[in-house]
Image 1 (cartoon, rainbow, N blue to C red):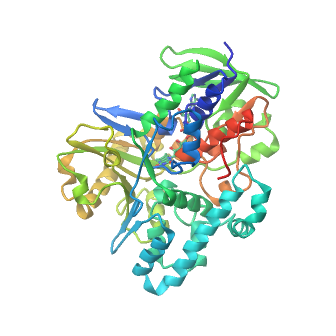
Image 2 (cartoon, rainbow, N blue to C red; image 1 turned 30 degrees about the horizontal axis):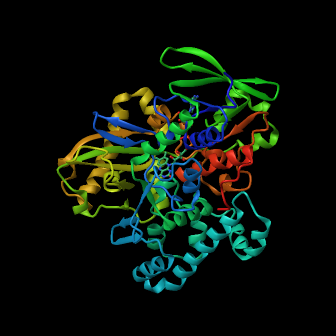
Image 3 (tube, helix red, strand yellow; image 1 turned 45 degrees about the horizontal axis):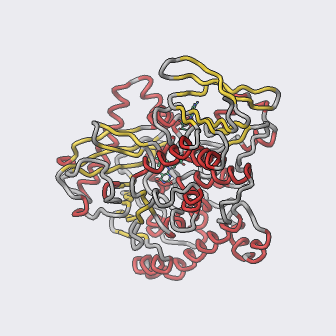
Amino acid sequence: MKPDYLIVGSGLSALVFGALMANSGKSVQILEAHEHPGGFGHTFTMAKKYTFNAQLHYVWDCGEGQTVNRVLKQLGLDREVTFERYNPDGFDHMRMPGYALDIPSQPEELIRRLSALFPAHNNRIRQFVHEVEKTGAGLKILAPPVKPTELLKYASEVFCAVQYLNSTLQDVFDKFQLPQAAQTLLALQWPDFLLPPNQLSFYAWVILFRGYQAGAFYPTQHFDHVINSFVKVIESHGGQVLLNHEITNFIVTDKTVMGVEAMDLTTHQTHKFTGDTVICNIDPKKVAKMIGEQKFSRKLRRKLNYEYSASNFMAYCAVKDIDLRDYGFGKWNLFHTGHEDLNAAFTQMYAHNDFSNPSFAITTPTLLTAARRDCPEDCQIVEFLTVANYDYFKQLREHDRKAYNQKKQEILDSILDVVEKHYVPNFRKHMVFHITGSPTTNERFCWCPHGNSYGSSLTPRNMGLGRLNHETSLNNFYFCNASSGYPGFAPTIWTGALLYQSLSGDVILGNG
Ligand SMILES: Cc1cc2nc3c(=O)[nH]c(=O)nc-3n(C[C@H](O)[C@H](O)[C@H](O)COP(=O)(O)OP(=O)(O)OC[C@H]3O[C@@H](n4cnc5c(N)ncnc54)[C@H](O)[C@@H]3O)c2cc1C
């Protein structure tokens, strides 16, 4: 039967859109290439006992009345899908030789801690943090749906935000002349963007930084429970999530998208699927190529001309007979750099594939919730994340599999050397499982072009006025994905909910 909404891809924004539509009485069918739903947010189990989320680590906007909570309430899931808060006194632990800064929720406390480290720069630090606050407030007013009365009421905040439209984080660090080490401590969560300060949009940094200050969260029942809850809503309303179905072609008549052809990857048979409206969660640029770019309006083609974000290296590990809480881990992330200049550190790893002095993130999901184990009682899960170059890994994997595996091992070893030197002396002795993921792993398991991590790269150009939204210039066809909204758990939930809101007229999101 032809559904009201045929959705291709089961990433978070698609699942949220699908769940909201199904909940409102519409028929929904989702086609997904992978064997698990959730896209970047999917969960997998190794050796039958260690469970890892592919990419998600920590999330924001999940508190009472915030975006995620509003969507969950609408779906009747808010009591079932709950979140544990990271330590508000230090949710990101920034570490580099000679310096340590735990980022607190309160901006005034952040000023106090930074000023204690850099007493000669107290005023500049204060001005910078206040500017971040003001810009963030302005961006909230500017987020769709925009209310003209709010624009007037908060004109000063809006003006403050608008002046940074084309700024990188580095531009603003330079404007306030922050000392190099302070810049590094503030920007050390760079793996959350996979961009260094001199390329990262100031807007993107402000949104994420303030988002986590307002509350960094981890799902009480881990991320698979969140994903499965959205799938359950769809299925309990008669909708369908068909896994192992790879879209190979779009059926387009004139300027109207009618449906898709998809190959069942278990039988290798191709079937046609149609829908009154087709929602596209697959990367928009890739889809435009599949459909034929000339079918899209000139304005749309300009918007589709974005660069992809960098790809990444992940190590998924389990340690046994050790409690990482004894070594300074807990309800927070740890970000490390050996290099005081993050721009140089990024270039060294990303452009030169040199990981001899790595900068990376460490997360410990087992320590974030006690409600459900992600591994046996005597074990803990630890994950490491850093940037990696797609072209380099693609070339290695295709031409020299041994060198590809050696490079992954080399990066892990270089990270583990740092871990053993600075944080957990006998880490390797306790490591009972590990598996590494490269840019080509992303491409194979998340179907993302060039192994990109966040869709379009979070540069000022891509975050500016020409950013893509759900409009496609084709009939009955809408984009619903990180690149046509914003990347991240809360932002993709917002993206799916905003599309639901504009197609249904049912207002569930407030402003900001
Ligand atoms: C390393 C890394 C770490 C991250 N950490 C965090 C974090 O800590 N916190 C946070 O908030 N966010 C994080 N993110 C970002 C977040 O995971 C993503 O922005 C978000 O999950 C993207 O959702 P999406 O709706 O755009 O869909 P995607 O996840 O991109 O899903 C698209 C779906 O389409 C499917 N698909 C593609 N092509 C086809 C095809 N031809 N046929 C059928 N199906 C197809 C894919 O298999 C996939 O399931 C991280 C991302 C990465 C890469």
